[in-house]
Image (cartoon, rainbow, N blue to C red):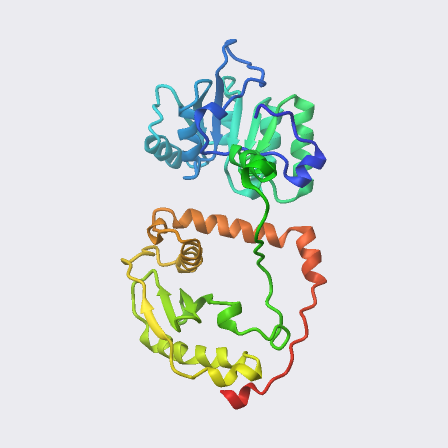
Length: 363
């Protein structure tokens, strides 16, 4: 919040950010003028009491120059429950059952907005008109037009605005940049690895278990459940990651027989004689019953793939953090679908022409 108010060009390129989970030393609001007793404490109010706001509360409590003095939610019951869960004493923190009441509190210097994105622009403008500095959870608005209104309200009322995007201004990003461009630290680049689209069959003449040694596949089974598979072409095995802990012999026995046929079919003709139709070995990765909410199997599938491919412990993925992962994935999908550059690139994308082959004869 100590940064100058971002202008239109900065907003388009997302050159503004705040990390909720930073240590207290990064919560310096020294450039914000205080309206209160002349001390250096920033008095913050919360507009919305979603669970994610708890991280922000924990960070503020570690700060020496900021304090939560009020919270609000359209449901007073939700606000009271949030206050109790985050140890916010009613003696020091006012609890309101509407956003208007909090914005009319003259003690509040700045507000953190976490309500539904469809409501954020409206309340951000209202808060700015009440002379409150703004921290708006990502995404701060539904479109650029709403962002313009927020910025205009902040500029005309002399308050500062920042959204809750994490990455660009995180101290780790600065360290990575310095490390990458310090040639004396890392030395010369010896190998580059890129992720992209494999050329169609017949163009590389490479054998799959040389060019590609394993393949991660999300699979929909039983009509209502997602699992993750790691198919190794080198060991001819399939590792199964299923958050329900079940063994799905019916679906996966058929899959274990199908994979070697697909692998043989996509080999260059001169190599096909070296591949057999013998079924791959299926191994079920041990895990306790997860997904107790019965609606996060797709997110578990994605996160299992991420952890296994990066060599991380699968125990990192559990019911305690999977809902937040789901929310972040949904936001990434929403952001990608509304990225003008990506939309334009995809609309002009023409897949390479695939060469025909006699797959039927092999199968």
